[in-house]
Image (tube, rainbow, N blue to C red; front, top):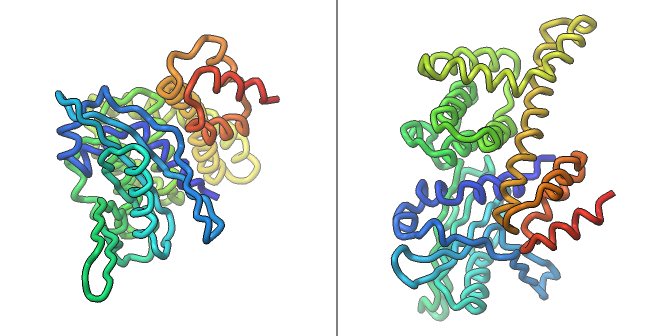
Length: 328
C-alpha cells in the first residue's frame, strides 16, 4: 500500500516555499522564508464520531519586514471524503482559537477520481440567511493540466505533474518532462532522489513505456545535462541492474533488465531518503551530532520508516535521542 500522506507530507514540508510560490504566490511574496517554523502535530478529537484527526502540515511564518505572524495549514486528501469542507472549517476555528493568528489553509486533493471539482469554502445558512462563509485554497490535481506547468522551474511542479490530468498514452512523455525539469533545477542529490521517488511511485511504466520515456528524456535534456543525467540514472539503477542481469540469464535477459532497473531505483531512493531524513531532522531539532547521524544511518528499512512517521513528533534533539534509544 502506498503511504500517500507520508509522501505528500515529506514533499510539501521539504519544498514548502516552492509550494507556496507555485500555488499561493501572493502569500509567498509577503513571507519571510527564514521565519518559517514547524509546529508540533495538532490533534483534534471528534467526540461525537469517536475519531481523532491530525493536521497534516502546520507552520508559523512572519510577514517580511513586519511583526505580523500567521499560520500555514496544508491538508492532503488522497480520497474523496464527505463533509471535508466542514472539517477544514473546524481545523481553522480551533487553530484560530488556540494561536489567535490568521490561518492560511490549503487543501491538496491528490486522488485520481472522482473528477468532480471540490468546493473551496464551507457555508452555513439558517432561515435563508448566510451566517458562515469560510474560504480556503484548493489544489485539485486531477483538475490541473500538466502541460501548463512545463515552463515552471519549480521542484513541486516537477513532482506533482505526475498526479495531474494525464492521458494514458502521454505517461512516458510526462514522466520524461518531470525528470528533465528536476535535472534542470540542479538540486542536491537527496532532494532530486526524493522527487524521482515520488514520480516513480505515481508513474510506474511498463517495459515499452520505459523505452519511450528514455527516448523522450534524451530529447529534452540539453547536451551539457545528458552525461550528468545518465550518471544519476545509472546510480539509481546500478545495484538492481546487476541483479537483474544475473536473473536475466535464467529467466530471459529482457525481463531481468527491467526488474533490475526497478530494484535499482528502489535502492537509490532508499539511499536518498536517509540523506533527506537527516536534513528534515536537523530542521526539526537542530544540528545533529555525528553519533546521532551514524545511528540513523544504521537503522534498518523498518526503522527508517518508523522514524519518518515519528519525525513530526520531535521538537528537541533529546526527543530524537530517546526515540533512537528505544530502537532494537
